[in-house]
Amino acid sequence: MKKVLLADDEDGVLALVAATLGNDDRYGLLMARDGEEALSLARKELPDVIFLDIMMPKMDGYQVCEALRRSHATRHIKVVMLTAMAQDANRERARAVGADDYVTKPFSPTALLEKVGQLLDLK
Image 1 (cartoon, rainbow, N blue to C red):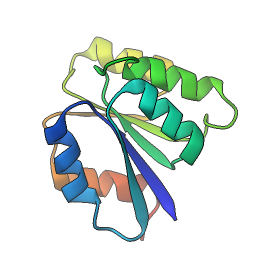
Image 2: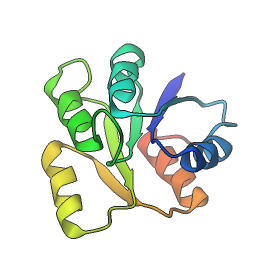
Image 3: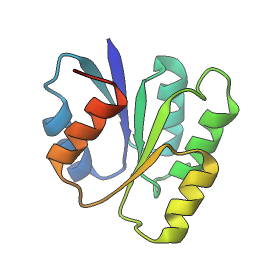
Image 4: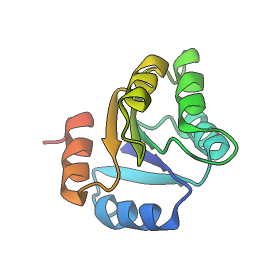
């Protein structure tokens, strides 16, 4: 089964994503509330896709993405920054650390479903 990891410190975002993505039996949904937990879960579970908030406690999304890209075991994981930071400089930094995509909050639940489908190549 494919796995999707969401890392965000906002309960509302976690609840919305769980409601949006949590009922699809084609993949399992994992959640982390800070950067360290996200990195630990990613190393343990090897998800297919990770949605990372940038501003999180303990490690920010940039740091998590950099750590994932440095490791042979996790560098293949698709990383999407899911953040309220919409400035071009943030997008450029996300690309520089290896993020595959960038989605700004607020986001459309339907668009998020479509993004997961594309990234996981779900038919």
